[in-house]
Amino acid sequence: MLLTSEIFTASAPAIHADGAHLFWTADNHESLTVSITEFGQSAPVLVRDIGTGLELIAGASRLSILAALGRPVLARMVQDANDIDLGLLYLADNVQRPLHDAMRLQALKYFAPRMNEAALAKDILPRLGIKPQSKDGRLFLAWLNLPEAWQGLLERGNVPLAAATVLSRMSEADQEDAAPLFTGFSWSRSNAVNVLTWLFEAAKMTGTSVAEVMKQAGAAAIFAQGLSPKDAIARLSTAIRQVRYPELTRLQDRFSAASGEITASTRWRVTQPDNFETDGAELTIRIKDAAQLEKAVEDLKTMSASPAWTKIWNLGGTDD
Image (cartoon, rainbow, N blue to C red; front, side, top):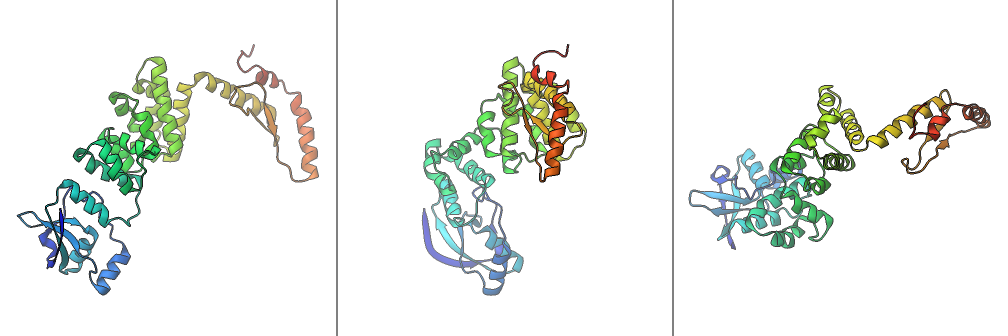
């Protein structure tokens, strides 16, 4: 590859800007538009001669702005560049551009068919601000082996980078069946990883599919309710967790019902502090004056006589 010293002007329509190496959308910052409008183009775009005209290698934002202004484009010629060279020049030209996970994956998807994984990790990940041996580095490489539909969900911000770990353990059929959960919503890291893990584990434990676990959780009915994204994610998470941990869910439901009976009409809270790994309960209250303290003590005495405590002490048993 040769980055020549040949700099010339060309009309914007004469430069083709549809190459696969232009893997990020042109980012026309208002400040760049103002600068070019006021002072002109200070740095040339990079182009190459493809026989049928000029092809843009880097400088999409500058080209777009100059085209809109109807101005000629200052260009620098590149010779003998292969596909990898084109991608590397594009990265170099965008070195100051802030990156997010979607942009990193888009860049990796360009280079992945053109070099082996070792070269990808060693040479491309660092250019994207990722250490090759880091957890994020391994996650990005894992995403390259996931279906395009899931890659699209990451690029749109619907799923987090960390979801690659559990997705990689799923069969293609399970991956396909789980995708609708994320198509219309943007999930947080913890919620997404938890739900995918519960789906995978529940399917493995019962010898069924992710589709069957979702059916047991009533996912279709939850979608049909037309809930807000926040409420839908909460409902789906709760329902799928219940399928994964049916006994824990039963304990939580019994505890919540019993504690509600005990604390009715008081400011006290009764909680189970260690996820039912041990017996017992924790009582808490917040007070700000002597009157509230006196009332809290009176309520506690009344609460101590509640028959619902027997349910707290016997969560795993029956109500008989």
